[in-house]
Each structure stands twice: as C-alpha cells, then as structure tokens.
Image (tube, rainbow, N blue to C red; front, side, top):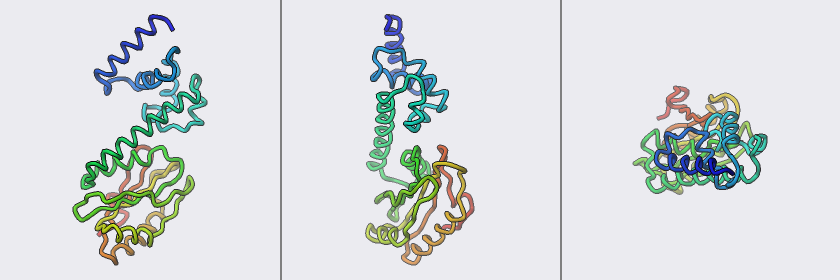
Length: 226
C-alpha cells in the first residue's frame, strides 16, 4: 500500500468518526473492510458491493453466496460483514430488552425489521405484552421454508396464559415475493383471534415484514381486531 492510500484511510476514518451518518454507504463499507484487508485498496470492492446490493444495509443482509460473487470478496470479508450484522441486531434487541415498551408502533416495527430482515425462510414471531403494553417476552414460534411456516394456536394460547399476557402481536416475514397478506394468513389469523378472545386475551395485530417494510393487517383493513 502506498503512503497516499495510508493517508486516505486515516482521513476517511477521521471523517467517519466525526459524522458517521453523512458518510456515503460505499465509504462505510470501506471502513468496515479495513480490519480484514489491512494492506489492500478496498474502495473498488466496496463500490462493487454497493452497486450490487444497493445500500449499506443491503450489503449487511446479503446472502453469503451472493457476496462471494463480488470480485475482491472472500470468506474473511463475508465473516466481517456478518459479524457486524449480528452485533447490530443483538445490540438493538438488547436495547429493547432494557426498555421493553411496545406501546409505540415505531418500536414494534423497528424491532421486527431488526429481527426478521435477511431471513431466508419464513419465521413466525409472537410478542407477548401485559395490559400496559410492556413486553413480557418475544419468541420465535416456528421457522418454515421460503414460502410458508406453521402456526400452532394452542401453543400460543398456552404460552400467553403461562406468562399472564393480556395482549399478543404476531408477525412473520415474506423472504421472497409480494409483500401482501395471503388468504391463508388471514384465515389463520381469524382462528388465532378466536382462540385468544375466548380466554380474554387480545390479538392486537398481525404484522408482515419484507423488503425493509412492515405491513399491518389491522391498518390495511383486512381484519377487525377487537
């Protein structure tokens, strides 16, 4: 590496530390790669990653097999990217565990985006809340394939009763395809709502996560949540 490139790294690091939010996405990737490629010019690989996956977050959530197709990206780079992504997700989850209020839609949406973005299979998550909308627990109920996952209403009811939950929010992701609720989604939600209502537990909403967006069944008018 030339002295010029050493100076570039120092200047970029200083600029990033001073104002990380204004740093272009490809430069964020550069900083991320410095630790694993200490003597190579990482700018070309960083720009290729952004060209392929669109954004910094797109790179973090990218499939390892797709990352390997990018010139200049090997297992060391992929490990660094995935380690950073795991740390980001765990950090957010731990923050929510310390301040577990889900009475704000943004809190719920942000949590689910962190939890489900990047999953390659459908995952069904249940959030159990008390009567003051404080989180009691959130659990991965099931994990299926790329197109569907199973839901066991009696298990959700049993867990809600065990935890003393007054409100329940359910969510799942669509790893591929359209971001819209299927007829099966709606039918299964109605069945779960009936099971919970009989035990004085409110199903507040069913949320669908995909493409960096959270869609609410309640707000979409597809189902009346009592």
